[in-house]
Length: 182
Image 1 (cartoon, rainbow, N blue to C red):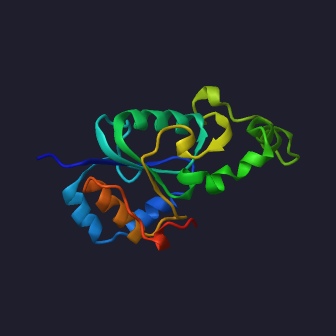
Image 2: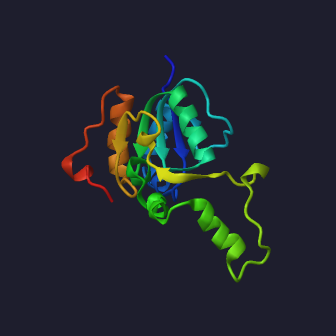
């Protein structure tokens, strides 16, 4: 029997959810024996694979690369989990939304600032930096999300509860104390 194929993705966020995932400590050894980790920032895989059973998505959708990856992983994953408060509702990543057009902010910071050394804007056309989206969005505003794992970051216990349920083929039933944000 083949092992479940699991992926974790890091979009616009701080990587705190992945750090909390690593706090699963010894249980990670059991998990590694039970699943195939097919894509993750903690593994050196460049392209998101096909036929993924469960994908944990950390971070919000803030730029063109985030958007492309989220659309791709939704197409290739059976279950998509919004992993942490940025993926669930935007959180810190979305704090730029009330400031308006990100293009104007970038221009002010890179070209118009008195301390600017070169007066050049980062150019998304050259492939070095992705284009910023007009606003930062949580995962569910872009794709269908199957489960939510709140927390900033979610605790290792909360992550384990959710992952065990998902791998058993059931929906994660978080205790009331595990449903809160932050």
